[in-house]
Every structure is written in C-alpha cells, then in structure tokens.
Image 1 (cartoon, one colour):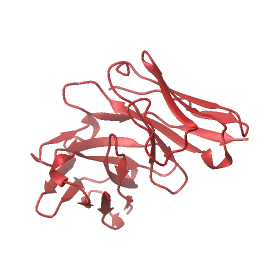
Image 2: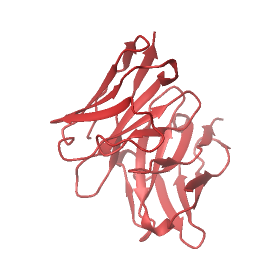
Image 3: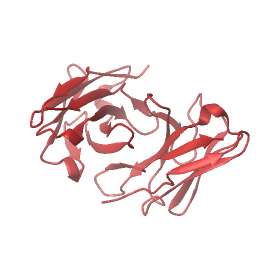
Length: 115
Length: 109
C-alpha cells in the first residue's frame, strides 16, 4: 500500500533552517508529484508547493519563494522540503502528500520555531 | 492570489443533511477534492474529482458541482462526521498550483 513516512519533530531557533524528509513506498515514486502542505495549530491547511518526482522540478507558492527548497532523491524514493530563515509563525505541522485521486498524506512533522 | 471560499461553520442535527459549499473562479474547469480532518488526525480524502467517492468512504458522502461552486453533502449525518472539511483544487494556471479552502467546521448538534 502507498505510504509516506516523514521525519521526526524539530525545534529550531528563529533564523535557522529546517529540512523535512518524506520517504515514499508502495508505488512508483517517479510517477507522482509530491506536494507540501502545512497547518499551524488551530488553523487551516496551507499549500506550499510541489516537486515533480521524475524531473526534480519544483513549483513554489509565491509566499514561500526564496525561503523554501523542495528536492527529491529517486534512489531512495525520498522527497525533502527545506525552509530557511525560520520565524515564529512558521511553527506548524508540515505534511507531504500525494494529492489527487489517492489522497495520500504523510503523518506530519511538527516544526517548532522558538527562541 | 487564487482563493477557494468555504463557510467557516455548518451545524446540523443527527440524521439531517449537511451541505458545505466551496466557491472559486476556476472551479468550472478544475476538479475539486474534499478532505475530512478530525482533531489530531491527518486529512482523509472523502470525495475526489468533484463527485467520486473513494473506496471505504460511506455512501452518505456525495459531491456535486454547479458552475464555480461545488458542494459536499453528507446525508444522515452521524456524530462521527463532526470534523473540519476542506476543499482543494488547482488555480487553473498552466503550472498546477494547489489551493485549499479555509475549511468548514461541521458541528453535529
């Protein structure tokens, strides 16, 4: 079955960077785009962008351009999302997801930004 | 930037039908997906491609579309349906960018 397994919780100080991983299994990794979504506590889902798992080409939402980098490693079927220059309002649960017909989501990674 | 608009809350009594709308300029051209999210859980796909129901989702969940508005209907609402519901679609641009509605809290009275 399709599974997306994310890395563990992170605590960072303002200005630092965080890199979240998403290990895919149960399907042809290169055949599907991986999307990244975040959710602050008590708030809605916020779309961040996607990476083409085959080509490695990313597509970032305007709000995050310049701070986010999405990459992938086809040899390990892993996607990565790195967010730099962290602020307190970046504190959220970050999800990787295979959106569309399947609607598969990782379990989420809590990123806490605090001094 | 492109937005999808949902009502913040909907309340219904058990056994009634709940209807949650999602409006967006590109929805007449782009598919909509509906997600249910219970507290502390990851989102669960309940409707895909406007009207289709994934396996394992109860038949009481249905989707419909009319122009630039799509609707998630839950008939015979049960207490377990109390959750946040999000619509998700594409901005309709040449390069797909996803977007979520702001979410609707369904309360079962």
